[in-house]
Image 1 (tube, rainbow, N blue to C red):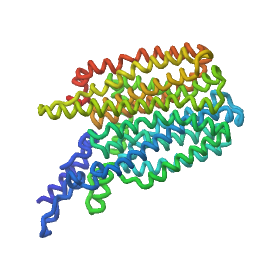
Image 2 (cartoon, rainbow, N blue to C red):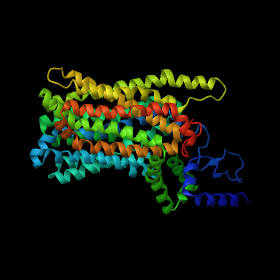
Image 3 (cartoon, rainbow, N blue to C red):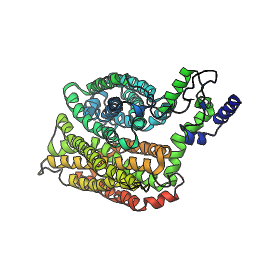
Image 4 (cartoon, rainbow, N blue to C red):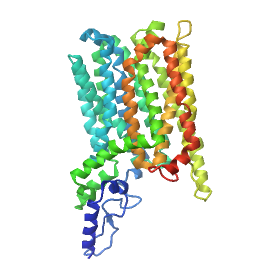
Length: 512
C-alpha cells in the first residue's frame, strides 16, 4: 500500500506546474523513501529531495569553515579576473588603432562587446547552474574564457577580436552570475555579511586593477600582451577551481539519489517544462518585476546609471589625465588605484556596519523573545550614505581636474565615488533579497545585472565625445546632477518600503 501511495505522489510531483515547482523547489517532505521493511535493524529514513538530517555532511552549510572560505575565495577570484578582463584592454587601444587602422570609436568595440558578454552570459550560465550544478558551470566557463582570451591575443582583424572578446565575456560571466548563489549555498544568513561583502567587492576592484596592469603591459609589450597576461590570471583561477566541490543542494541530492539507486523527482521534468522554467525565471519575471515593482525598477535604474558611469570612466580618465596632466599610458593606469582604494574602504565599512550594528540589532531582537525582526529597510542605511558620496565625488572631480590643481585631488574623488558606488550596490542586493525572498530576489537581481552591464557597455561609446564637447568640468558636472537626481531613491524606500511591501504581489509580507 505504501509503495502505491509513493508512486502516486511521485507522479503528481512530476506533473506539477512550473511555478509550483519553483516555489516548492527544494523543500523537504515531498518524496521520502522509507527504508525497506525486510531489513531487521531500523535505520533513519533516507530522503531523496532533502538532507538526511540537520548534520548531513553533504550539506555545504555543514562544511568546515576552512572549506567554506576556500569555496568563497575561488568564485571571488573568478569574478575579479573576469572584471579585470573588461578594462585591461583599454590602455592598449592606441597600439590597436595603429595595427588595424581603425578609429578611436571602433577601437572601443572589443571593450564594449566584452561587457555585453558579461550582461547576457548569465542568461545562459545561471539556468545551467540550476540544472547541472555550480561546479560544472565554473569548470566549463573558465577553460572557454582562457581559450577565447588566448585567441584574442592572436586576432588578426578587429572583427575577429570583437567576436572573441564577446565570447570571452559570455564564458567569464559565471563568476558574476552564480558566485552569490554559491556563497548562499554554504553560508547561513547570519554568517553571510563578511563573505558576501568580500565577494561583491571583487567585480568593483577588478576594473580598477585592469588599467594598471594593462597600462604597463601595453607600454612595454603592446596590446596583444594584455590578453596573454590576462590568460595567466585565468589559469591561476582555473587551477583551484578544479578542486571545488558541488555546493548546490539539488545537484548534490540528484547525484546522491543516483548513487543510492533512487529516482530524484525533478528529473521527471519534461523538456518543455524546463524551457518554460528557464524562460520565466530569466526573462519573463525580471521584465515583469521591472514594469510592476517600483523597488526593482528604481534600484535597477540607479545601479545601472552608477555602473555606466564607472565603466565610462575607463574610457574618459585616459583622456582627462593625458589632456590635463600629460600622463603616459603607464601613469594613467596608476590613477585607477583611487578606485581600487575606494572599493577596499567601502568593503571594510560595509563589514563594520554589519558586525557592529546590524548583527547586534538582529541578536537583540531575537533575545527580546517577541519574535521581533530587523526590517529590510535597515540595510539601506549604507546606501543612504553612499547616495550622498556619489554626487559629491563627481562635483569634486569636475572642478579639481585642472592644470593648477595636483593630480591627487581628482584621484581622491575617484576613491570617494568607488566607495559610495559599492555601498549602494551592496545595500541594494541585500535589500532586494530581504524584500522579495530568495526566489523573487534572484529575478530582481537578474534584471539588475542585465541593465547595469548593458549601460556599462553603452556609456563608454560616447563619453569621450561628451568630455571633448562640454569640457572636463561641465561633462562631469552633468554626471553629478544625474547622480544627485537619483539620491532620494534609497531614502524614499527607507521611509515607504513597508507600505510598498504590503502592496507587492512578489514581496514577503514581513520582509524577513
